[in-house]
Amino acid sequence: MPATDHTYSHPSSADDDWPSEYFPDQSEHISTRQATRHTHVVGASNNYASISGIPTRDADSPQCLGDGRAETKEKNKRHIKGLSMSPGSPLHEIQSSLAPAQRPCVPIPFANKLGHFPGLMHRSSLFSVGRSDDEPRGGEAKSQGGYDLEVDGPALSMHDKAVWEALVDIAKERDHDLSTPLLTSLSEIARKCGAEFTGSRTTNAVRNGLERLSRAHLECTLAQLGRVHGRLLAAVEIGSHGASVSFDPALTSALLGSDLNFQMNPDRRRLLSGTLAQWMHDFISTHTETRPLTLKYLRELCGFPGDSKRFPAALTAAMEELKAKAPELVTAFVIDKMTRSGDFWTILVTRGTESPKFVGFKPQASSQQSGLRRRRGGVVL
Image 1: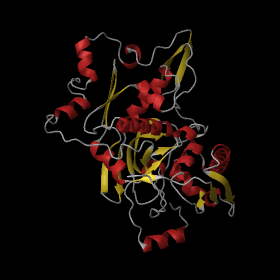
Image 2 (image 1 turned 90 degrees about the vertical axis):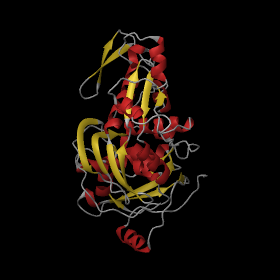
Image 3 (image 1 turned 45 degrees about the horizontal axis):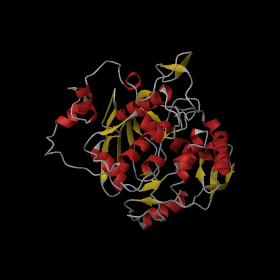
Image 4 (image 1 turned 135 degrees about the vertical axis):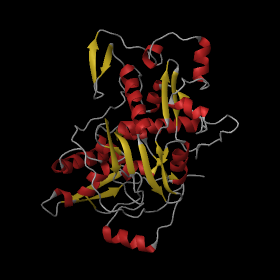
């Protein structure tokens, strides 16, 4: 199905609280700089400390991807084919649950549409502007439209979003069967995310992102299917010869096949230095026009992790960066400071010449919902 330009709007959802602790506006960006001669120690908070004078290892070496123990050639051969996983592991359980003849093939939807990802990912706080956090959290997450999103698991960042998108595109390039493990490597995922050099710091960031994605469970409503749920990744195993990643077939096929999947521009997004600018880039890319939105609504929708009083300045800086680096997306914006409280200020964005492109199911909004949107001043597609 060719990508086409449409106008469409989700029904607005009621404002909801999405509290989060303050973190600096930083995330584990995948490095695009040349690797230097040092190694990195992973701490409890996933920050990296450098020790000079020790060369980094190649990203695909056993010392980087595995535990460094010698394995026989035949065992490695079986491992990389996905035919022999350690008993008791999640991947082993998935593969053992059905005999090969019984396991249904689940083709990846729109395999020829690289760079297209579900609207849910860009119109919610699922991947927020805060830093990744391994502490478990759960409950209702802010989303625009009728998704009614609930998330259980670690806080996910824009870095984690890039890792998930990279995996989806790798799977699409191979016309992957979602019922089977995707065999790849940390360095391949990193390169797909835009990394030019894949040293240990870069691959460790990918490894940590995969681990968080495998613990993230979400439940949402899709207009065509109703309520769906599952994990962003069903299982991840990393060994001496690479990574074996299993998608949740039901959830992944639903998101990629039944939600609107918008074409993103990750190369342009990587030019943006701030995570709020990156989030706004993707959010605006899913709309043909904008209407005034309160800053409180946007702050909750993007999962801003700080004092609400800091958000107006942060949003202004993000929009200025978008104007400078993506003028085809944003040509101007105005923040109306009509009240004393910054939460009730509104922002109006003037779009550039670029129009959204998407594939997927396009439900028809009812006239009653359209009337509600006009009264509430929501954003439309």
